Length: 364
Image (cartoon, rainbow, N blue to C red; front, side):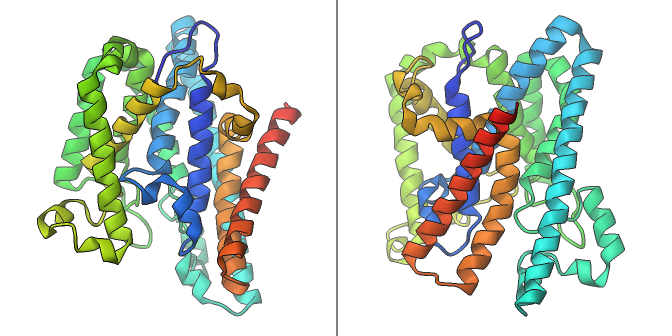
């Protein structure tokens, strides 16, 4: 990542946040070829990792400036207002999502949808289930990222205050919490059982890392961008991750991976953010920043405008994408699952997300 140059907006952030939104949408449509258009089938990290890293970076750019110019109280007020917006967006998506799954499951007599999308508790304990949803303990399938983001943003006023004074110390503390969470199995409880799919005590590492980069961590280590050794190490790790991930997806390739190595990486530990996911994302970020400078002319090519616009309107695009992923799954399940139909459904979803992004920009 790179700091802004004066008032110049870093379009790379918007581009890759838009890419993360598209990847999350496509990745949430199971058992289709659409997942092969996302990064998760080619490496350890995926759109969620990228989304959290960029979110921490951009939140720091915005609210760090407010804190420096207007103080902690104003910054905290603005940040908590943003948390409220995220919470309201989540509740709206939560209600629409539950209603859609419940209605379509009964309309088409496919009650399996209720279990598949973790909506069945609504039938047996409606009041308790909705109450648990209000406090983010109950989450239907795929509605996990936004609650994680809400929790991290709610804690961010205090974290940012400390980071503006002791950037490196907070980063070290974040690493310590990450390691402790993995060792002692810290996590939030879910309803009706289990724990959060995205462990906040572990995933905070990516959010804080983004903040650390925005507050000077990237600038302080800019010399590393010219390190050929680091360049080859990152490239080698990405190729290794590609091989392991393909071996997990394609049974014919699994035989070429020694069992000792496979046990370390298969299955991919997403809940507790396995260290190799962090290294994979860091390697990707290093290569992107090395190869694509902030003033790269290609960022203004028309082909990238839809992605950039989706990144600039991330919240509504993200919410619409989550809902559309369920609709796409339903359409494919009750229609044709042939590859051309999958591509049309996926393309239609991306088109709708892009239209929403352009509409939101126009409406402002």
